[in-house]
Each structure stands twice: as structure tokens, then as C-alpha cells.
Length: 294
Image 1: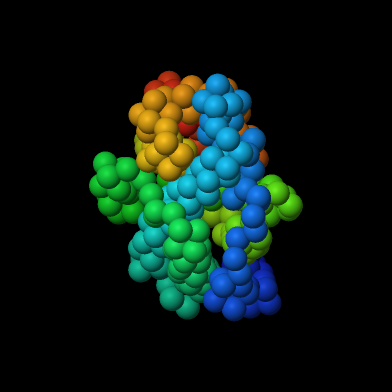
Image 2 (image 1 turned 120 degrees about the horizontal axis):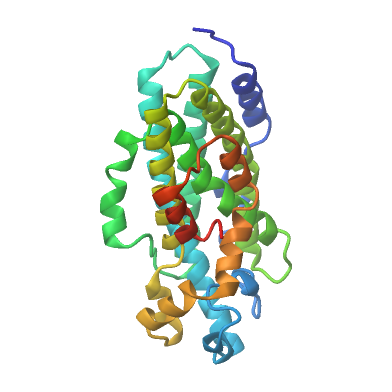
């Protein structure tokens, strides 16, 4: 096995040169700024609906705090699964290689990110919603069965859509400074993770059999459906006095929210199509159900 890998070596050098420590680089004691949203209002799940129109400005701002807390807590859950996938990969591979060294560096990054997300949610004063209980149970079986193309395509689905959302948010003056800084840190370091995952996916698809490709397509499609449908927990709506079940129904049928999810996936979906990781039939139905494709 080659001990030096050009991509992994470059990513290791980039990590050494530019990484953040959220404990130092974020002012956790700064109070929130009155009147600012916690995420972009036009990206919120109810935007554009009569239910949204019924909310006061204060309620919309409060709901934005709970929606961003929900997304952060789902991201935290996913990154813990990602770390388990990477560690299982490391366990099977040569510890002398640059590839293994970068995988371990990524795990270290994700440890900081999950700590940062957890601390941010606590600072918001919002619950750590996370995915619903049945999704948490499903999550336990994912890392042991996710290998090769299936693992890295699923990682891209967990990372790239949220990355696009955060890139937009970190530049938006309407958003609380704390959220913008958390987004900036995550975007910078996730860019390296995306490069690594794409490199690993491209290597994996070259050697897949037809059966392995179908399995990878199926697992990735299901991961996309679960991830995108879990971003906003129904309980967030109770924070502004809405019925969670009814508000959830409005959100998942909301054309504006569906367009937001599709926008989040505009960069990664053509790439996954190009790599043969989307497929057709039942899998394409799951992709449509995720709202990442029409």
C-alpha cells in the first residue's frame, strides 16, 4: 500500500495550517442581538404559507431559533455516525498511510464540531431535538453496513446540503453572530471532508460490481430520505404555539420549503448522478421523497 497519498497529504497540511478551536474562537458569553433571526427566514419550513403569515415577527424569530437548533442537533447526530464509519474504516486499513492519518484528523475535526453544536444549542436555550426516536434506532445499524461507495456517498449527503445552507447563512447580516461563526467554522473544515469523501467515492465506484452498485444506491437513497426529512423536528412548532402534527403537514407540503431542500442539494446531486449513485425505480422515489430532486 502506498504510504503517501497526494490528496490526503494535501488535506493534512491544510488541516495543520487552518483549523479552529471553538472554545477559543467563539465568544460564548456574548448575548444574542435583539431583532436578529437565527436562520434565514426564507429557508424556514413554514415560509410562504398561511401558517407563516399568522405568526408575529417575534414568533418567527423564536421559531428560527428552534429550527436552527433542530438542524444542528441532527447534524450532531449524523457526525457521530460519520465518526463511527471513519473509525471502522481506519480499523481495516494501514495506520502508516496518509489516508489513514487524514481519516483520523477528520474524526478529530468532527469531535470538535459535535462539541461546538452541542454547546451552541445549549447557548441558544433550545432543546437538542435530534431525529425522532425511530430514526435514532435505525441510525445504530447504519455504520456497520456502510462501506466503500455507500459510506462516502451517504457522508456527502449528510455534509454537502447543510454546507450550502451554512455558506449562505454565514454571510447574512440578518443572522445572530453566534450562528454565523458556528457556520463559518463548520464550512471551512467541512470543505476538506467533502474533498476526501469525493476522492474515496470516486475510487470505490471504479471497482464496484452491479450488485454492489445497487446496494450502494439503495443505502444512499434511504440515507438521503432520512436525513432531509429529519432536519426539522415536529416539536419545534410547539415553541410558538403551533400544533406540531399540523405544522409538520404544512411544512412537508410547502413548495417553498421543498425548493429550499432542492437548493441545498443543487451541488451534490449532479455529482452523485455522475458517479452512478442515484439510480432509478424505488431508489429514485426515495430521492424525490427527500426533496433533493423533483
